[in-house]
Length: 555
Image (cartoon, rainbow, N blue to C red):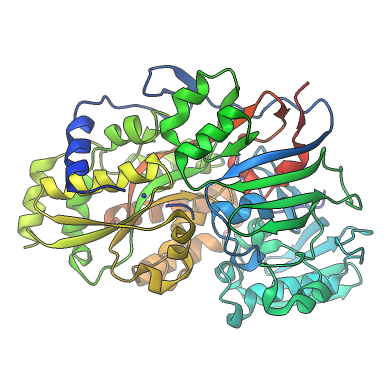
């Protein structure tokens, strides 16, 4: 994949179940499993069958009345300012659109802005498409863009995307269909994020009319190929085709998103036809779905890494030796085999290799060659725990029944800690509440770590590496290092891709040394489509691309 350049005229997460006995059993089985090598271009599931990354699914051959999609949790809200997890974005991407658009190929193209220009390093000018209408029929103007971006910058909103706007000095209307963004300093990331939920444009009148209910009831006042229909709380969300859409009309009249929190229930729904498709397929179901004649299981580029997020450095994890010991004790290869169904690659890198697509070979080597090995070293880990005087100390890992990929990582961490003298407790959180770990500090109280699958929202390693800057949204542990902050600022200021990536290689090395999160594996995107439908993208682009509009009849 290639990193998209800055726009020209023509850029958390999910997080796992078990107990001490389960952890010990997992440890025993993991020790016998073989490692997978190389980037996730191919691999094997627990039955030994091969998989490959597909660039997409076959195009739809016609229209359909409706299709049903399985999602693992109900979104707490569809307000675009807090759309920072899989359930929200999977749905919202089809209703609300951004100034720029991330494509299924993970490149960037114009969205609601027909053109984006950069007359100087601190100015971005967005010329809007004429004739774009919101779902209420009102025409989009520059005032709506200024208002929508302003909501992200308003501290009263606690917006998940506020960090994107940290270098924004002003957002002003400079014409009926033109908005000019002035930056405090050059920012290579800002224009990329205008293709994510950070760049969503909603109707000023519509949002203001909804007030505090915006995102939880009524419409979303957006422009996408679907509009919000019926929300059956606890059961489903229906999206209805918007026939006044400015672009290519959706092939399906209705898209129904069913909330199926139990992994087995999701799998059974896919096999029975109760659900026509779904992303984030339970890894324990890969082989079952692949061998079924109900449909096809596809894998695509995910720009995703599975990690252990460190949320509290006030306790034992504040000692780098304890973090290093846990990293050394983890059986990554065993987790990939058992927890990801073989569809992944053990890694020592927080970033995926695909995110470095625009770097030179020399820069890529600098980013990856100096990272620590992924192999276990239990004796060295024990020595570090003893040296840190941490033997017998207790750590708590949040877990959830979202899927085996989550639950087995939690038990793998528990098993690793047990082997080296730590006491690891698991705290089970319901799937619907797991997303609160990303948005509510109170939800993280008493938790030292939790499994985190991080997907890049832009095709740039800085998307992840900037999370450890002082005060960053996902910097839950409160890590602060002046030298690291300065490197983030240096990388942010460079528009030239390879020169920026050279700085990011330094950041990657620093983050790896500090083990601010413990990297475990690269994980491709998985999507299952039954025989009735096709057209959905295989890549992580579905987070911000209106993918449901492409879904139609397979025959």
